[in-house]
Length: 392
Image (cartoon, rainbow, N blue to C red):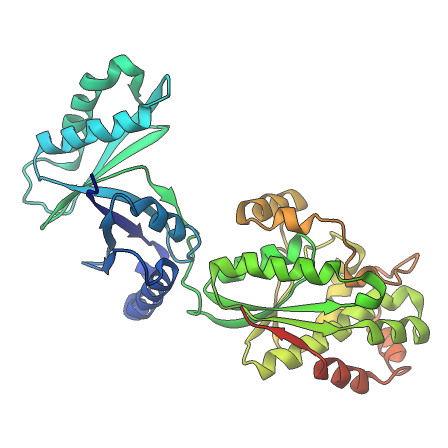
């Protein structure tokens, strides 16, 4: 039987936005509509600050799964309408918990209710007790126990002014802010673990993140190019709209190798990358650059080297991983789905012509002297003129 279902979408940070709250809510609603698509039988409404997606039991799970990738959503649950009386709540609760118990030897659960309609004669704790005790009486012999502090399963009930819903287990969302509410940025995306995580961190803070990859196929082959295309595709599940730009970088690297001090190569590469990234960002109305730097993780990420690279641009440079250790970054990459692609064996652009002893405390005046030895502007213009742009 194809019964009615209601998916409750919750947000938290958006609710603190005061007079601008409506702008954030509308962006979130737009993203939900885009994620759910035009097919299927569902309606979306927003009564009193709650987002409700009304559908049927055959489609509810599939629609709910799509919500897991939308920044701005704190959590979501699939629910069913019930009559506003304890007996109806308990009857539906017994059926729902029994389905969850099926195939399990035990389950710790609790009931948590929210009484937004204060005219209902029981308080929220009283609803929890009355419904929970009836469920326990029916299912305790099947291994069901009550655990109010660390339950494995939470049955939620919302008693509203016009309807009452019983919600199945709450699913955690991405959180943060809706994409586009904070503007556009450009992420220097490599094929490694760190930069995709940085991009994700900015996406969930409301940024629309575009990507820039520096390619050196003559020396590295096409593997890195392929990896970055797949990483951008994974990240675009969270925003749908990030454009990938691929810049040929081999001429710049060969020139720096031939004309500059070997120990300065890595920092000089990155200074050129930043200059190119800033021009591309400004051309595309991006308000900042993003990278995957974590302080002290590798030789190029000391304070001195970060300073030497940052001063080549006037745009803000965001480093969301700067204080994270590698384990934290790896865990986040696994959670967002980029880890397995990132660890595929393929050297990145900066590994080409790696010096035996790269500088860890670069001196800006020394770098600037090295940069007078090659036609910087000519190389930048040539690289920008040969960008490959890939729309999502």
